[in-house]
Image (cartoon, rainbow over all chains, first blue to last red; front, side, top):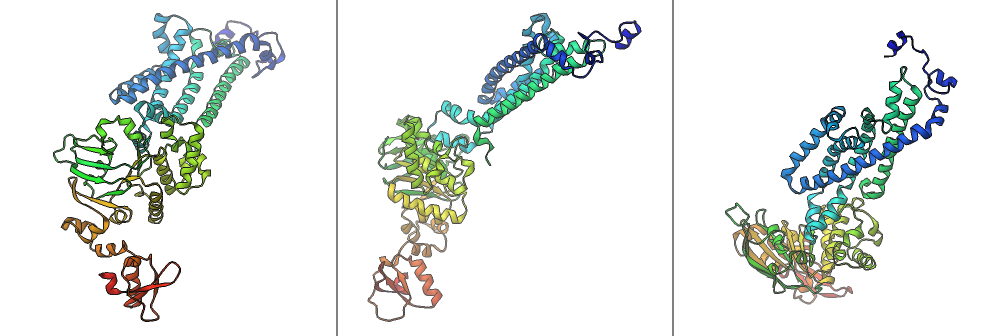
Amino acid sequence: MTGWRLADGGPVIPNFGHGSECLRDNGWLCTSWVRQHWGDILQPALVQHIELTLIAVGIGFAIAFLLALVGFRWRVFDPPLGAFTDILYTIPSIALYQLLVPVTGLTVTTIEIALVSYTLFVLYRNIVAGLRAVPPEVLESARGMGLTRRQTFLRVELPLAAPAILAGLRVATVATISIATVAAFLIYYGLGGPIFDALGQPDIFRTELLASGGLAILLALSADALLALLQRALTPWSRLR
Amino acid sequence: MRTEAAELVFDEATKVYPGRESAAVDHLSLTVPAGEICVLVGPSGGGKTTALKLVNRLIPLTSGDIRIDGTSILEQDVVELRRSIGYVIQQVGLFPHMTVEGNIGTVPRLYRRPRSWIKARSAELLELVGLDPSYAKRFPAQLSGGERQRVGLARALAANPPLMLMDEPFGAIDPIVRARLQDEFLRLQKEIRKTVVFVTHDVDEAIKVGDRIAILREGGRLAQYDTPQQILEHPADEFVAEFVGRDRALKALALRTLGELELSPATEDGLPRLPADTSLRDALALLVAERRNALLVIGADGAPLGVATREDLLA
């Protein structure tokens, strides 16, 4: 595309803003641009991105948890539920958007539906695996001491599954942050917006690409670290031995 | 919460697993007097563990009845029944995500005991099972096998149940620690006087631990139910005699002490001296090793009580 524009006789140096030297050279990270557009481009995109992720992981977790309860309690439902989340996961996101747009339109809802469906796979698998991994002798002693089915679930099975569930939550969150950038293919929303913007420039706008892409990476790393800390705090016993 | 020890009665208790023709436990009838340890022992396939789990209804009875202090287990709410019975298993089954104190507090919490009560009770029980109170804040992963089993015992005792079910509690522990745990368990039992049903496949453990031993043969039939001494000296049949072993006479000797013998007055000097609480088995071993025919029994204060001869030991 760049070549075509050049041949078309367009400007060799695109107008990337108020022509600081860095911008005129299309430098890798022009701080002046970042400072200038933090308020009107980067920050709103970051906030939208966090929103996208929180909603997707939150709803995804709620759905995956309910499905996992069913798959855990009634084993016959586990294979079909697992296969269902598998299939959702294998659909390419761009194809999924195309499928959804006729129904939900060019909206944030469309994006969220796609993101939620991707989180289900890892969350469902991890929740069920975590619940299943409770040692049989632990369950027997719980039953033998007179814990009801419900008490056993809430006081024994769920807390013991917590490390696996939180591990799934970490993977799902990081993956969602990454996949959510593709959402801008559909509408200008989240950090994908400025990324697509930068890529769409005649000569890739490096500063915008690096700033918004870098923010996505930083967001993923911070979310991962935060969840790792949460895991440590909630399950101090799981690091022993 | 009942706190006294309870009498336990198996009344024609029978278990046939679905799809099986033969019974796992076949018309088992026996009475465990309150405050005694009844050991269920026998070869694998004898239904020992099944019989144990019938009591707290982890396995449902097919027919017959089991009564605790006269009340049928079938008439009680199953959850209440289990909370009123201490349950200890070989793999312990401590909750890995709870501290030792949290584990011990499991049943008291179900009874909504306040935190301070649980804390005090846990300290008391840790001392009772021979662990330092500082163990309260540890997690099971930080304990050795023997320590875990002690905590398992403390947890089972937390609500002061009148009946304890113990399924091969020391089976997974190495022999030296096992012997110590057995000794401590017997010392503990002298203090707390629970009714205990104890499953093991180890005859020696049964003889050491049991006030009474129920020997179950294949198909879950009761071969003999008696005191260790009676079983060793008067086995009911070939099966029991074989099961307790060819050395049963020696095992019987291990159950009695020199102090229980009628001693003759001391006549000769230079006899080997042994305290009155020595078992006849150990005394005989000494006589054999030293090629002697008699020994001098001494009291706790060291004063001679009298002479025991080889014949006295074997009488």
